[in-house]
Image 1 (cartoon, rainbow, N blue to C red):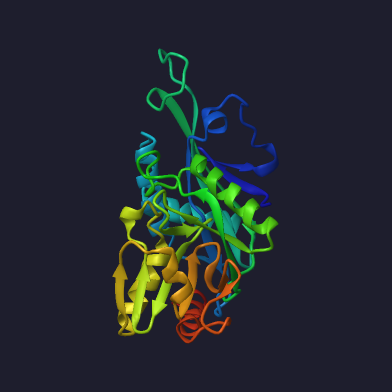
Image 2: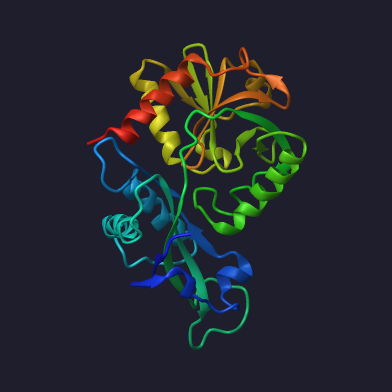
Length: 294
């Protein structure tokens, strides 16, 4: 864990940052968060946050779902992220966790579960984290379903929603898999525990559309753009489970996993059970833009 953290406009020692046990974000999971990777670069210096402003744009959107208005602009938060890395003298890859959470009732607000009339705080912390780029995944299918958009805004990264992911991961890792696939309420493909899923069928790149209750992933968007630029036909639509087993390649994409080729789903090999041609090219492209971008 880092020495310094950012909390409500001040730089504090991480070990001294204490919060009341009664805050609503802890009690009810009413918090919005992001995960941002920072990569060491071939030119040296401090690691550079990757697509930080895009992450903070999504954080603003997530906060709106919780009736929180952030005072900091995306550019200001991106600058704070770089300062966090420098204050902690980090030289290797790391992971930044911005979180905005509901705190205490404002004067005149009656007790109860609610969003309006509750204050909020913002914190930025970081931990060292090595790249996982190119690591393969054996994917299991969880019985836990993705929380539907009708119950919780799927396009918002809200902490309480990740209980479903935690349940799914525990179920699948206990069965010997590396990660969990969550299906929609209708039994279609949604996403993995903390990443989006993309399939290649010949010259077509397919991914569940946003109306399937998935998070609009930043890495997902980047990969779809890369697919179009490499002359693949990109299709966002509902994806049936059987399509995974018939795909030439299946890839998990997200800030945490980066680009992770799926070698099997529920024990069934994908393609020849190794990293596919498109996945390999995508991994090299991702390495270039994270390590060598000016």
